[in-house]
Length: 165
Image 1: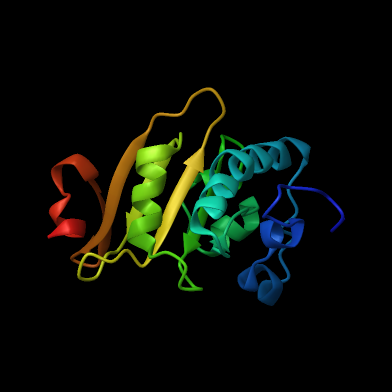
Image 2 (image 1 turned 180 degrees about the horizontal axis):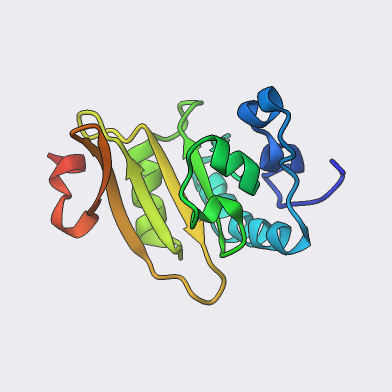
């Protein structure tokens, strides 16, 4: 199965990798339809970002099977399930571009369904969530914050100060 071509910069192994799935013995293999959505996301968003960054970008999470999504407490409508578009969480783990720089690049240059700057500290997102839905991208931009222990999604246009001061 690992010979499946996803994109120029994303391997099949990165698509299905999950420490939680491994630990809990959960099958995390996408079907053909889910795989197609993942390939579109990777080719339309990740690969152009990776070329701009000029170096590796860490994929923290990409595909989640229903069982894995349930195990981690994910939303039942999560695009990580890849049945309604697809989503990935990425991180500047290699020092080629900051998470905020990657967020801004995606926001200003690429088509996407959702873009979320996750839990910024001093204006620095801890990671970036981005999704793509072929032909139906909404271009929604949010900033995820914790308020009273709950995750809240704030509209980017009204809360830019959370990122830029």
